[in-house]
Amino acid sequence: MQLAHIAIDRLNISAVNMRHAKRAPDVSDILPSVRARGVLVPLLVRPNGEPETFENDAGRRRYFAAKVIADERGEAEPLPCAIMEEGDDADALEASLIENIAPLDEVAQWETFSRLIRQGRTVPDIAATFGITELLVKRILALGDFLPKIREAYRREEIDAETARYLTMASKAQQKDWLALFTDPEQYAPRGYQLKQWLFGGQTISTKVALFAVEEYPGLIVSDLFGEDSYFADADLIWEKQNEAIAAKRNAYLEAGWPEVIVLEPGQLFHSWDHEKTPKKKGGKVFITVSHRGEVEFHEGWMSRKEARRARAKDEGGEQAETPAKFSRPEVTGPMQNYVDLHRHAAARAAMLDHPGVALRLMVAHAITGSGLWQVRPEPQRAANETVAASIAGCKAQIPFDAKRRGVLALFSAGRGRNRRRRQWRRLCHGAHLRQLAGAVRR
Image (cartoon, rainbow, N blue to C red):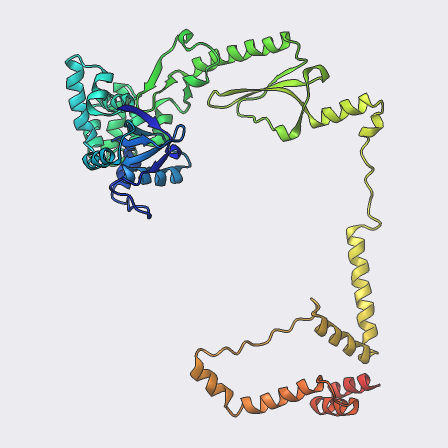
């Protein structure tokens, strides 16, 4: 049997898994534990016949719990797996039945592993004996770096896995200071990433980003046994060494014939959309970006778009290609345009007073075309239920209104005579002013 950490996208559920079903299982009971501490017991898997892919014979619920957490965090950690030799389904089913045992307490595992280490056993020996990966053995042994009270708090799940991970990098003095904050109800103890910032004075730089040989670093390096990572303890010293390596790299580029090497300010990004890819022989430059976490990237053969346009114009022999278009001014200013609009509106409105027929036609045209200057919103008249609707439909006030409405609609129906429509229109216009407007429409 081979032990390994396998990416979750390379696993699928086997049909012989004792928990196999079409629907995803309910993992609410184990989700908090997996979210806090990860998957502890390896999944039993077999090669499924395709390269680098496996089927899960045992550990279906842990598999789905890990997928839920991966969706929450946007990234998935590889799962510990025990890879069985290819065999028949009976062996796989038996392994699935045997494997379904509750995970052991990590602190209890640490106590057992520590005794074995004192007796001379190695990490590979322990991993082979208990059927887990060496990485898991190292993570469990890392609990020995905790103060006893911190270890017990972790056993009671008062400390989450991320906080415990960063506490493995803390010195005994730092653990004592953190424990004092943790046990004081009036104080706040930093957790998770805030704890990482607290331990390193606000800045953490991984050894993975160093441009120089880590063996040459004279300061202290602390290791994170939970994640197999290490960090520089002295931020000022690492930046001194990193800047020296960046300067050496810059000089190497210049000696290689690059016309210019630009080192951007820490944290400043290089925007490729504002630059054009340009070879060295045509004036391409090298841009070096440095993040606040110490990561250094080299962008070779780029030129700003403005410089690239100038270079092309120079090659074509005409600087006028770079001459920007002349800015065209508007014929009138904004206040002047407002002055003209208001006076024009006032003149048109005054003229309409002497031509009511035109005013009426204009009003009707706006109403028919749905102009933004004419808005009509009918009252919805919505009944709460059928009983109310039937009551309002037969009431004394509604019946004559419906009759009048049908009369108005008849004015626009086809086949009606012109004179008849005019007479009906006059009857509807009871007010003197409306009768005047109706006469204007007739003329």
